[in-house]
Length: 464
Image (cartoon, rainbow, N blue to C red):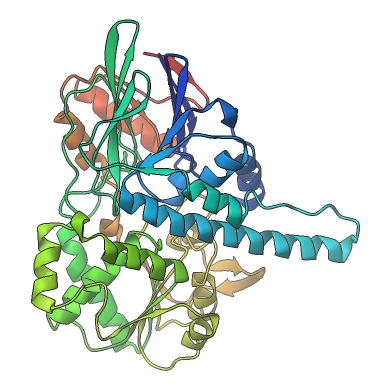
């Protein structure tokens, strides 16, 4: 019985691990690595295992760094099922089709550029196509929370609510081999207590081993409750300057949380009546999935829906824009407004156009509400770089840059360690899904609590 740590090991993106027992191999996630284009293309194209040797796959949630390479898995010969909650499957379908579309646009651009200088240059192929994405979506096998499901002989999985994004789960694998039973927990991405819309992360039953994320394993967040007033203050101050608030946000999870909080503020009369635009086709699709799965909502969200008389993800000042023409028109619109657009790390998508037009104006605010990986444009903005490159041109940063880390859907150091402390029986914790410093720091925190913690190296295999 072994676990091999293949992706998001001493780094954050590209989540991928394998449990091997009884001659079967279970893949935990198959995420896209996100970083510099050339390195990301290479790492994502070349899976670190033989896809035909994987029997089954499980998915904790739909975020692209956990689900995004599933089409390549299928394209490379995987013939099994992908087990996930219904909400995760619905969100993943939207994300994977969007990813295939982005890849098609990227390679078309790269090929045009290459052929201009050399008409005989070899063409770049996408990692996967839209049809590959559709085939991956056809492999989903739906499961409910708390429903033990046999993945293959001797291996069962049960999902518990992770409170991270809609449909997210913490997985517990019950593995029987050689007359013994071992229970392995996998956090995927653990959410935060009191976070908007979703229920709090559930406690786990006793387990023997835990694979935990550590995205924020070396720091703490601002309190979730403080985010509402801080968002109100940022928006008010920007409007008083006559500016616009530009919010780069992940289309799935973060966009809905920000919209929900704005809905509360408008409903309570805390903000002037100024328009809000969600400028992301993917966010439009994801928000529909959120509306289609109210069974995932917490009590507070249900109460707000009753008070407002409708979903907080739709209100009179809010416009969802899908077409390119609508998006372009926003850059020439007069007066204050809020624009929420993807991608959350400012590496692609419509947010780049809004930053190109908005960064150069000192009355504007760019509000960062999510994790920014090393090397991304979002990271450069929060680190205070005075000039940044967008579409191969340099722009001076005059807008105010504000970071609110309390919107994070990831548990911080204290929230993670508190949650883990309440899990009984844990013999060993494997710390993954964090930059190296964060993972090492969190392992030290766990050791201080009397737990045995290990930060694997990439491709490391451990016998249980």
